Length: 107
Image (cartoon, rainbow, N blue to C red):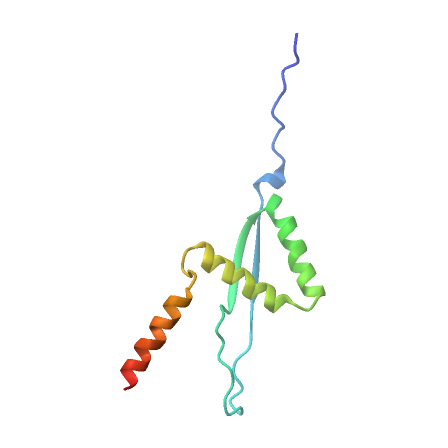
């Protein structure tokens, strides 16, 4: 007779949610004549299951160690915009048409 496999019992960690928040705290210098604009999300927050959080936290720690946390944050934000369909690829034809339209308006 074959042994009946039982489902593994849940572990308390299976009920945990890990929230990671990254916030960029900076502002343009009022003494600067032409400070560059912030063209990125200033803060992001992720709520992950405990199983997903370990890998994500390793990526965050690696970014901190490599001094690329800001780049990591902006990359994640960009991936979110693309994944949500908020950003789509702009073709060369789109760019040319926009430039031609702008040129016509300026005449």
